[in-house]
Image (cartoon, rainbow, N blue to C red; front, side, top):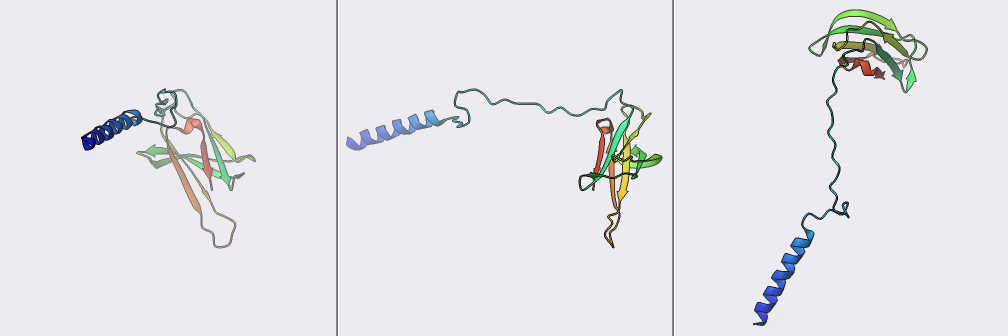
Length: 136
């Protein structure tokens, strides 16, 4: 008899603990659901026609830096459209671009240390209207 009572008491305690602890979240003390957000997929801007391009090395702007604008062919550069040089603030603006069209931007930087090789960077896509930043 004492074994039976002990087993029943143990079973009741186990059930009570399981019921109390189910779904327990220490961050949620008041029973409110955690907020959720949906990340939107960026889409091309149907009206933007200019791209601001900035070039930096070690967080400092690079003046007189050539930046190339190419057509985009399936995420790779195609035909060179034009080349512009950055101003004293390390930026240049490409105007008269076709809205919602993919373009590729390219620049190359060679550090001044002896024996350094050129570093090439490419940015292709349709999000150029948000600004293009090259960091070396």
